[in-house]
Amino acid sequence: MGSSDEDEAVLARERRRGRLVGVAGIASVAAMLGAVMLASAATSGSARPTGPGFTDEPIDRARHLADFHEHAGTHTGSASLRVLGLVLVALVGLYLWSLVRTRDAAVARPYLLWLTVLGPGLVAAATIFGFAALQHVADLFMASGARTTPRAKQLIDDSGAMRVASVADGLSRIVFAVWLALLATAAMRVGLLSRFLGYWGVAGAGSFVLLPIGDAMVAAWVGSIGVLALGYWPGGRPPAWRSTTPQPVEAI
Image (tube, rainbow, N blue to C red):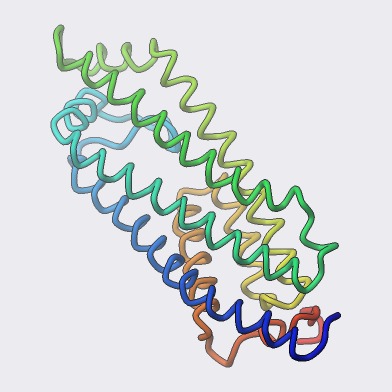
């Protein structure tokens, strides 16, 4: 451990970076919320989204492909906001990882750093690929032929890109979930997160793979980290934010 002056310099640097990261965390939530709102606005009530990240419930696929083609610009904006949100998630994750490393390098394993980039990055890549695959199918559907639900279903089922996109989405979500659970646990171990926020991160990781509300839980968790980075939290931040040494959550 360094001198008091060195520790204070480290903490001051973390606070300065925290202001930017806090804004990034809140902006990430806004971007992901905006992506959902745009996608919902461009989808008619008779259609459920199909493709990566959605269940295979009975839907009006013809209506969905027509909507996607008609509102291509809006869907492009939705996908772009989602990717932007994921980039900001990675920035927040890198900041939190650096805080963990300062307090206990043994807890901030190098693979966690790589996962911090890889997790959000893979989900962003799957989002872009899935969007492109669905856009191609929608364009084929609207270009010629009968615009019926059976034909729409056939085009979707026959699309190799759609199958790849579905698999890529599932795998990327698993990698993201592993990263989020490990990062939340590591931050809790050194005392940067309370038990509530630590377990919330783990629960968000599981729901991101298994439940429709997973994206919302992850977004809320990232927003919470953003608020912490800005220096605010009901009842005050955990002690590890004011020290360069671990303050185990059991002691909080």
